[in-house]
Image 1: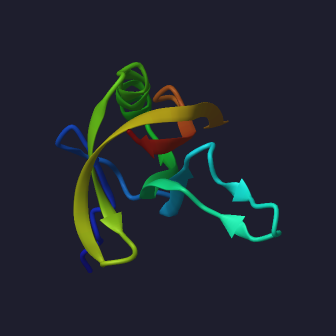
Image 2: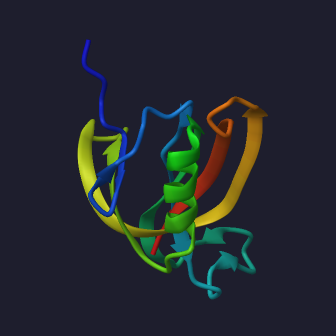
Length: 120
């Protein structure tokens, strides 16, 4: 059985995630809000900005690689878009990076890594 390649960062296909979610939000200007008449006015600057919370169970080799990606200001990300069911490419950065030891092994442990990829 073949798995979908959910994420690739800078051309490196990432392992199958434990969790994966595609969120889309609109960026609104400060000029929007509620009018005197009580209606809501939205001044949308950008629609469908993608953020992807993901979590992985990884080896020390992958832990080192993912930590290296976290240090970079801009990443080229290929992700599985849940709206079109196709792979899309965009520029993103990593926020909320967290790594925790799941189990100590003779191979330097099994690690749980989670982060959110945010579109630039």
